[in-house]
Length: 309
Image (cartoon, rainbow, N blue to C red; front, side, top):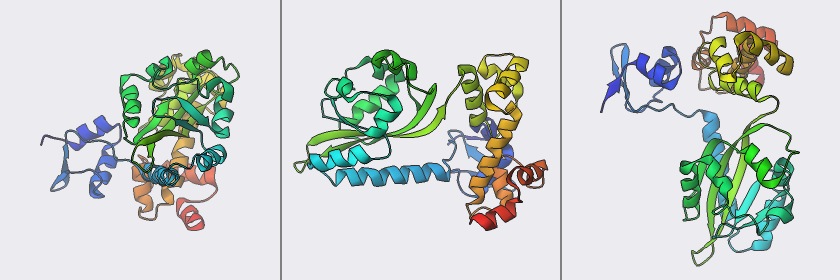
């Protein structure tokens, strides 16, 4: 096995050296080797999933088991789908859409008559907008595999054009999608269910959406206004001006808001000390962020943990 240094791992994962060291100390980087006070990191290291990802996967697995327990009771399946709080598509083995629920209609403004029995996910060109990798995985779900996508960007503009839905009220939406088969008592494929859980939703100008997405994807590293403005496609001065106008925050204030939100979430994990919480968020506990936390939240990190645990 090939190894890299902590510094190289930090650059690869887009986190700080301190965060890599903290992950190693907690045993969250598989096959990392300690030498005195340093670590050797496997070259193919991947960023560990956090607790929220694990919780999402567990919830989705529980939902899958509930659906599979229905088997051939189509009436019960229809009732569960209709009142389920998340968007759901149900397909026949040939890819024809036969059921959608109210949550799906509400988000994507579909009319049932326009899609039921008419839309085929295996034949429609809209599936190509996700790329070959996603298309291949969707095809595998119709061959009996359970497939899960994390933060998959929906092709909103293509949906607008394909279904003439100019009234969709958001510009960008990311979904956690689980595609799973349901078999009958003879172990034959009866349905393929697609479950959608929104992970991120953006409204507003595309340039603002790109800037917000860049900040949210890079909140663990030091704030870089030049890189953020570049991601938006605007000059730094113009980006700061329109970002403030559209969001009420400067880009740096928005970055701080994301930091505070993540600290609050991680403070609820009693397996982490407060200093570890700050380290996982790319900060020192005794930094100016403790003062920012108190000014924004109204209490100290330790008191916040006591009051919310």
